[in-house]
Length: 201
Image 1: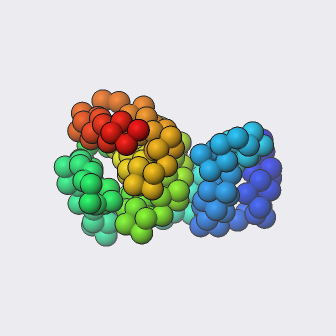
Image 2 (image 1 turned 135 degrees about the vertical axis):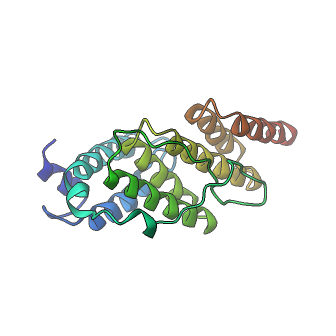
């Protein structure tokens, strides 16, 4: 897939800005996401193609357009990783950044983290999941990003339990465990969620 194809897939003209690429991908990813279109193979193929195009464009466009900011301008607190029943705030524990991560990638990561928190607080769960998945695709080796993605899945799974969408809730809870299988706190929380599911069934 060449760059021209990537722009066309996202409905953009060649040379579109990073902000336009990001906005277009979020909109289209939400529309074609397999979880929203579970029985639609065309939507699944479109989602895969969109994600591939987005990844390629990020590698070319993002480093050129995101100007690194001084570290003191980005303030993020990192409490202990927990997800409570009454809160949809994403919480995480800081870890050492991988040495190969560039300053641009670090900035992108923390900007995405802040946006992810906003989506969860506003209960915009499909957008939160699409955003977490896109970041995980960009930084697949980052343990914090995997944790955020898993927590987004778990939070959405709990909401689906409350909405009595139990089969779908089970899917997302399993995704949470698969995404971050070594997170004991998350594992314990999800096991409690599964117990609730069994009681309802």
